[in-house]
Image (cartoon, rainbow, N blue to C red; front, side):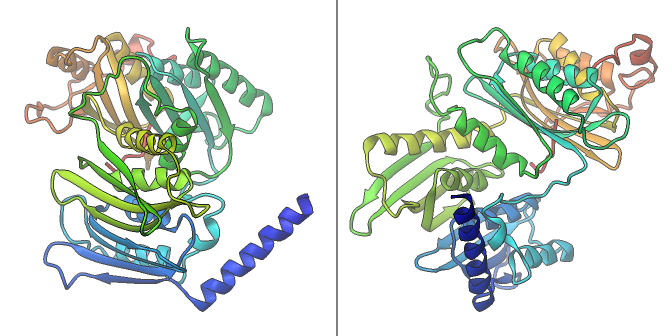
Length: 445
């Protein structure tokens, strides 16, 4: 059986290469026909997952997709995207335009990489840790403290919370050598201690910790983890306001043998990626689609079939598609106050900052942590653990402790523009208190 599978996979790869040589992908980038947007057209031989690959390339470049037209009937895939940069301008950076051509055009390799993982962008100089468990105030602080105690430095990570669950993908390095952690006993200890933290007092829901050296795309992996954890199942009292809930509808178009999915919700960055990612991982194929996100409310419509060729077959399946798409949209909705921290990176930084949040009764609902050229750029969305609005006095006190220019309140007209005081978190005050005994976030949003 193993020999047969291996041989079949090899034959599939050769067939893909043949199709690719006969029909190489074509990318046309047009900055002339529209006054306000860059128009990107992608034509290629069709295969399952190709739409997600294209959307992911554009999303990872921090581009905003304002409109999209999708057609993949038969053996050919044709998409048109209207995009801008994050500031709403046309995309004119030659480096970005060249990257799009290389990633999606004739020289790209996405056709053969789809089976392994969509959008692999990380290196092998770190150890990846995947965590999922019950959410609670202070969880991120406890996790990061354990990692620091185990001499692990968090270099990149992303944390999502949704429907009482928390998931994280964290990339860590060895504090001593700056590389990946390979000692089996140490890896076992990391998994054991983190799993204990994730379990907490909740014995009814499973907690998982997975350590690997493989390649992954963080945001897609978070969707997969939370989907596998069934976070789309509402727990008891529904905490989502009906006015805030996405409007997702699924009906069958019997004449064309499609199921038509329509989505109306507040627009936000990476919304299209989150929806296409979920449909792909649920094994649905998008044959036609129309996306309009030029207004505050985004409208998306997709004609889909299951990968086996059938439309949605039952009411139970229809409800599951609706619930899973709602969850995919809600996972990245950033509840709470947005705080951005930028300072020189060091081991234990994440633990120190999140401990201060916890001590001030702030709960982290989402986090994005990244390290760039020795600088930590961390974004946190926080809210009061009691459910009340965050007290501005608490934020002022935290900023005084950490440093006014190091921790900023984002998207706030009342942000104080002051120089950092001489005593702040990463200087003499913090060291003199011996708070550095403990140990997330790529941000494109």
